[in-house]
Length: 519
Image (cartoon, rainbow, N blue to C red; front, side, top):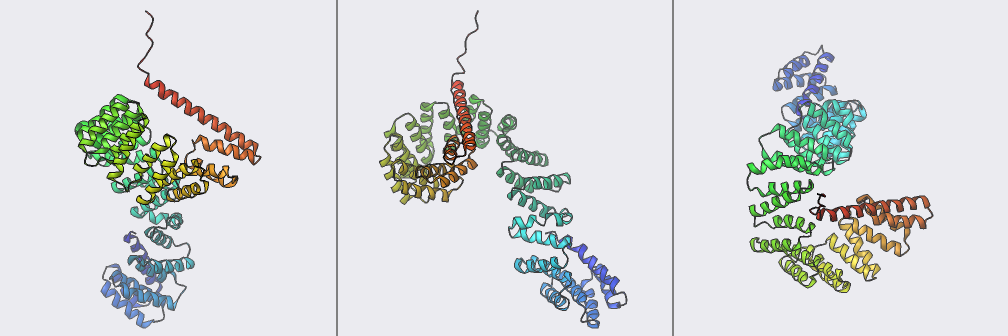
């Protein structure tokens, strides 16, 4: 809250007092002294005026204002309370008392007094402004935003509080209001670098990637020599599906900051998103060379190799990384995944067991071990692995989901339902448990609960073909033919899209074989 905004209120109050008590020499002297900043002398004069008119609440209020300027908040609050006792219908003392409570973070009492002031004068923008400050300080975004319009003129003079209001709008998904505030502040150059950065992070969290790019562009303009701003802008470009612009930033940056593994990895990601696989591989490999003791560099590199079906090369790189990294947990899991894809299930399980021995408290290794059994149809053994893992591992949504899935495959529907519900409780944003739970409900004849789960799947993943298919069956059973046909058609469109993407991926692997032109 901008304390400078309090000053116009005080001067308005003092000037009003001067006009009201033109015949009171002590009060007139006090006003002059107050305006000159002689608060001690002004206080003495106000008290003389008070002695002459002890039942006048406005003079108690003025003494409170002066005590506030002298930082004697306890004394000030006494006089504000006295003024309220003498005239409970005077809004000023409630408001001034609230400001003191706000300064000492006594939010409950501040809110009480501001609401009293608001009831007496609902048009006072300062009361709305202080309420906005209070609600923002106490993380009550919805209530804060309700004060935006009535307090806007004052908020425009308080860039910090207006920035907080824009942030609150973003957290409430009021994106248009947030962008309006941000645009206005930027036109007035009222946002600093730190604020622009925090807004960019919030915008990115809302998946508002073009707007995130705009924020980071401004940050680069504000500090053009700082490489980190350009790095952040390149991430924003990648998120906004503008990888070539990211490459244009990162490629020269990688030459200036030679062997920076983060820049090299991000450059690899940008090249990959742009479809330039050879350069992406070169960048990932360079990142491995730059930081050979970091397992993440090997994981980034081998992920792309696996996508290209180059499993043998990926396995060699992972095994080399195991020699160079102090913690090979992730690399053992990756090697096991490669071996499992290649059908070497026994070797894969050995790799997963090594990972588990290193970090038994991490769920990933246990889940991977169970999946190696599930791939071979050995669901009972997978179930035993997961049942034992649940004792060792802190509650984990993915582990509970896989446990529910294998229990379902073993026709243990009640136990499967319980596991899937635990998974959803741990992470409501994971689509797969909702999908599997919907199947169990449908199989049990619980149509409405099944529909709720499949609709939740589509909220989380609108491209999920199975959920559309299942909903088409549900609507058919409910007699809603139109909705059933709509879902069935959407299922076919999504399946066709998936087939086309699969064919494009397959064709890309053979793009080097081209028919020679006839002589």
